[in-house]
Length: 300
Image (cartoon, rainbow, N blue to C red; front, side, top):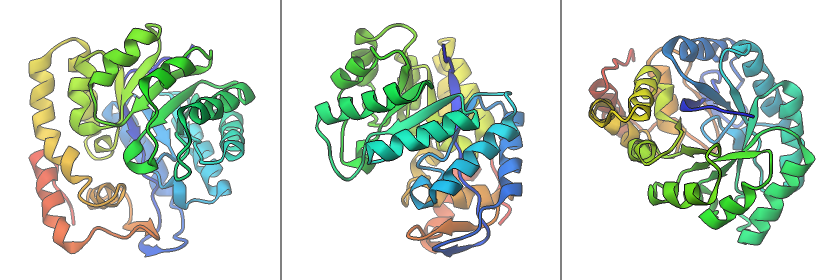
């Protein structure tokens, strides 16, 4: 049975410097980031999720990054592969590839753009779960997909043996109890919204799949540890340092600000793929101030 709690980083995908339709993937920086997270206490890694620019990668690149992260991690923490798609056939294909690459689980975003019904969501995820025998985590982020998977659909899907959890990114903490009441105790509930993750955890969530963890991994880990033991005071103190990051890493579309912040820490080059662009100059001071509030000092 797959089990993972705590801070799970939604890892950025490092690229060579520049903004272009086809920037080169930076393997050396990817390996540095993996070690940075392992040394900082990150509890798990999501490779090629939304923050990893899955939408701008080719299928071959997508699979290659999953393989590389699995190899670099070498079993030290679980690796979750982002394999969602708006085509059920494509989602099955990516999930099969992730399983073959050795991923511990897959994260499948609700099909975006085509706005399926709740029945369509159920049948989509059921088809993937039945086609590929790997633990699968549902991912609900209606702000990006224009599709909201309701708690009753999550509960219905939880009956499938290899659907093991959900990343809930609505920011609605009430969904923790709504989903928990209809699922078994081992069904995993992850926050996908850093700004409300503390309350999500204290309400009974198991962890957070975090954008902020890209730049403040040790603090996100410690926040989760404190919340797990019910220490609201300590968790809230950490969260107060991180709240500006939680907010300002979304001053432009994710992952634009967080890639700027990771590059500013000297961990990778300033590379991103169109149609995403580099952080606009008018937002640089805001993200810099948020980093300094968290005790981080940008190098550039």
